[in-house]
Length: 218
Image 1 (tube, helix red, strand yellow):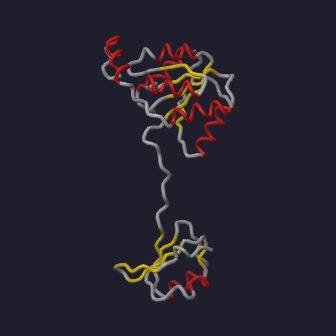
Image 2 (image 1 turned 180 degrees about the vertical axis):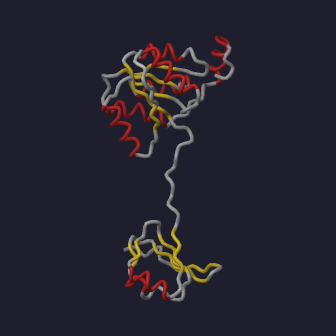
């Protein structure tokens, strides 16, 4: 058991003993507990009954370090599936295990492809997520519908390299991926590329878009 963090510090309430091990026993306290009035434990350290009794007998107060919250990205991307694809679910789960959070965008009771695309695009336009990845049979239809909404810049891609280029040159905030046909690795790379990239539209492109349709906020 590591004792590198089991050191005594002096605070306003007297000496403090810090213990970073997974279990604290009465044997661990022998030779280490020497007048300290406070014991600081790791969040999930287990204290055995004999150790707890010894701490009470010596008037030692137990304090636990707070559990570190996982970092949550400030701009979370969403994803939607026209119909469930096991490879998409596997890729999302794999990335979440690596710490990349993705938000599922669900459209209930909508079987018409065009209306489904409109509903998903509206979710992104409302700011439910920073951007959206749509897995569908007809990416062209999805992009055509999405690009009718103010503020959306939709692009169809089939590779991570195309996704990266769409983000770099257009600041795409909705990407349509044709399914089926992609491998697990391709899906994972596309999602990772998009989920870790900002969606700001380059100034030159934004200027042209304003000239074309008057949406000054693009």
